[in-house]
Length: 116
Image (cartoon, rainbow, N blue to C red):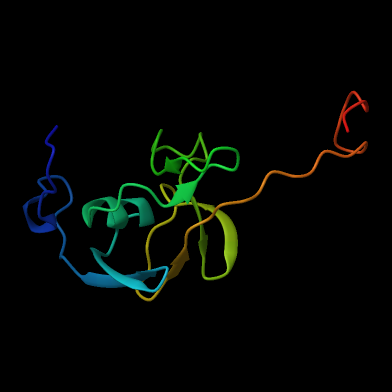
């Protein structure tokens, strides 16, 4: 395993071309390569976090990288809650970061029904 990106043309298993693509992250253009996930494009461009936690506003990016943890969710072309580690980037994708407020406790979502 290497810690740097290998050129697609030097891939010994499935050599390919390096077709460039460009996505938009909150109005900022980010360049990547065809075949990369959205998370791969963002990480390759030095963007490490693109979501904030609801409770403390802490930055989140890729944690598991296999679509289990939901830390990397973004809005893609208007569709919310897309896991960036699971979706391949397409040229022209519009990516928006997400931060959702915690829901207000109500008797409907409070299992104990005694919170105010």
